Length: 502
Image 1 (spheres, rainbow, N blue to C red):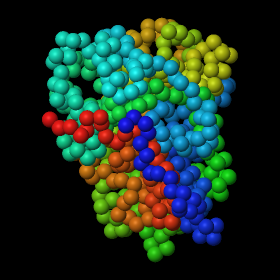
Image 2 (image 1 turned 30 degrees about the vertical axis):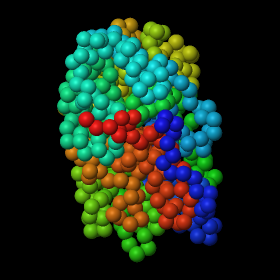
Image 3 (image 1 turned 45 degrees about the vertical axis):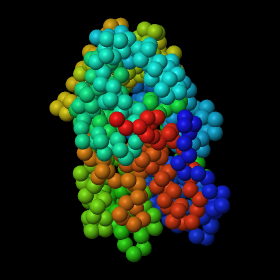
Image 4 (image 1 turned 135 degrees about the vertical axis):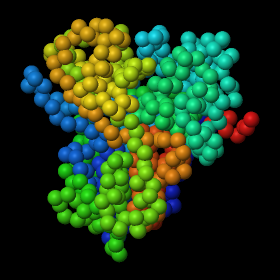
């Protein structure tokens, strides 16, 4: 049960491409991972595709932008660190279009979690086989002492091994992750070092995060994941390694990529969908894929005249879509470096703001070149769930103070430049919302959704959810065109004890 699960099998009995004289027109709104995935699959199957992105570059929350440092160096800044986990099968299959060997990815090394209260822990050396990894964690981790384990409610904790995409949500979606962790009864250390840091990485606090969503993530990343917790990272900035190659690939397949093209309205008519573009001409297409983030999708549908009549269920679902917590990302160019013993990526728990630290001068070629030339370092501070009342500058200052408390030598570095952004575009997974979360196929004929906020029973999250829903959107269009679907693999869809009750 631990080999990749075939969700959608290849169909060699069906046509693999649409006829050259019968290619339907598709407009994909949103040039992030979900939109580019859908556009790529459709374009290589012969569909007439235009991809519209409102920003100057492709990428979405994996995007980049240029910056000039005080010393005159031109650099490319990413939206933030992203871990390319090895069970992201669909994402990796898509990325093999631009690099068949995935040579642009490398192992990030350890995955430690640090705290000022307890000794750090690293979970990357655990066995990859589910159950064996859990047993090794309990055996090796100082967060699981025998006297603490006696206080754990085994029946509640076994929910992590009983994940089922239907039953888990029926039983647990009404309560918060905080309530679930209370019921587990783990020690304060175990709760902080293992569970709270994990919950925050989905841009939600445990006080707002659905317990069922949290259990789904436990299954996807740990208890059902045969690849282990190891993750990879691009060896250079994302525009060079991902987005420029995808733009070239889309061009090769005849797709049109239009940036600085913000979709303003979508209207359904006899000829299909019309997409209004700010400062540009209206596009029309038989098929429409909306692959924008939560606020972007809300705003697009709210501005679209007649949309509640065209798709009443979808309009209501999107109008009440929950957003995640605000999050802040700050990249610091420093004179000097932190201790060499620190990992390239470090999770942080029980700080008010700071959730992770990434040493970009160790993992990214462009940052490494600047650091070698100057003797400096490039450090990213990330908070996944910020207080709503704080400003960007206040949050960055607090993260710097918190890092100095963890790594005192950081306080001795001179910060030469800071690129910081406060965002509010992550999806929320509030308790009780799952049954109303829209999926890929909607009640608006010809309109599909894709993104990390879109519902699917296929185990996935974050970048993998974006890629999975992008492929599902493309597959629904290919089905309508009579063309074979793109295969999809995943980890096992149910937990190892999902068939047991009591």
